[in-house]
Length: 335
Image 1 (cartoon, one colour):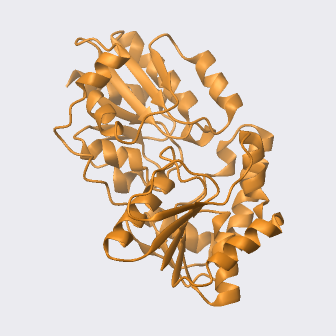
Image 2 (cartoon, rainbow, N blue to C red):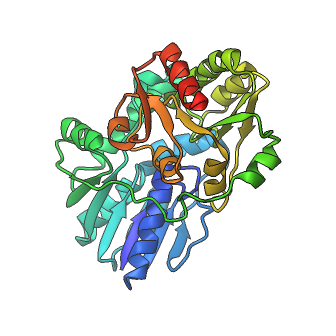
């Protein structure tokens, strides 16, 4: 019996999609698998899903996840349900708290699957910076009795050793076979109103300051000056609503925002674009960049964190060089 713990179990989150793939893989090998999450909208296939529950408003969700250890009732119930399991794999804080308590009380093996936490200094809002610092501090405390750890990149392997003194094995995220060359993007381009003579740039991910989407908009403005027949699709769930509203107000008329893309449709969106772009300044792995490349698309991103390990078909640009990034985009589009 294997328990996989992740916070939101949503296709909007890279770690959640990794947890989903892991649950499928373990279930196919004949294991009895249950995913435990605070909330979730991924339909389980061959395994069970148990929702622990948390508040609906986004702001309250962030506070609840930060101070989950204060909800003694739900913590206790979750730990008691795991006492008969053989293995608990935790992908994120605060789920590590449940895994750690289960190990401490019942001796169940606890594996931490390390996806990392974005640097607090990448957040401009003082509240957001403080929140991320506190989140990272609590996350490190929850790792005090892991049996073993897995990092999704060499970059994160080094970060975990430096921050928590924990050795980990590097296991790169496996890309689902549905992300492949030959998938058609025609229906997506038609739905978005992209003409045959127009180019489409694509980014998908959490709309959070460390993803640097505000810089991507500035880069796109430069690209549009040289190539007006180019559009940018930004897809993802807003992590900070204020930040999302700022993005929409600063975007030019050729930027398309889409909060939701169905998981089955995502390969078609990669196929529809001419280039995948990410201006993110922190990535533990960057699953979308890997998925886009699997679909045969080039990727332009900054030369930071795990990107040298993941971006193999495309161009890496010096950190914060917006002009250089725009030049790289134009180069690929002209090719």
